[in-house]
Image 1 (cartoon, helix red, strand yellow):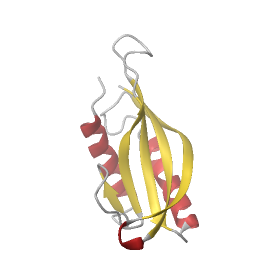
Image 2 (cartoon, rainbow, N blue to C red):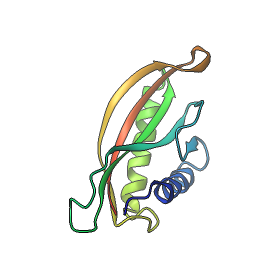
Image 3 (cartoon, rainbow, N blue to C red):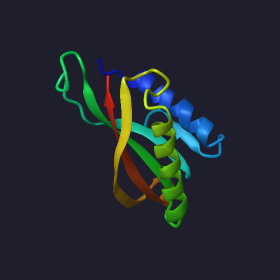
Image 4 (spheres, helix red, strand yellow):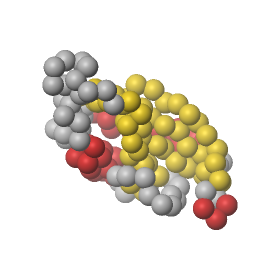
Length: 128
């Protein structure tokens, strides 16, 4: 059964360790974001028991956020997050399997106080 909280906590711990605490890692979308950051977002697709009886198959958005001129840093961080997930596809035993399936939605946006941000969504398919 899909439960966001343990998955988000596992991802937060794993990404924080992989980046040695050099980026902000948020287990849920915060009110404000300071770059460089990783935000464990919400599901983008959440059908229930479609893969097999009693197995939920969801897509979870993990946002990689940087400053407007940090394209390379955002891309490097996206790669680090992807490799971290591939390194432990059970996300510390919180899921049956997880794998990053695509990066999408490179966007520029204006945040609080006029800060210019760049972000990309790393979509992670998870089976519970």
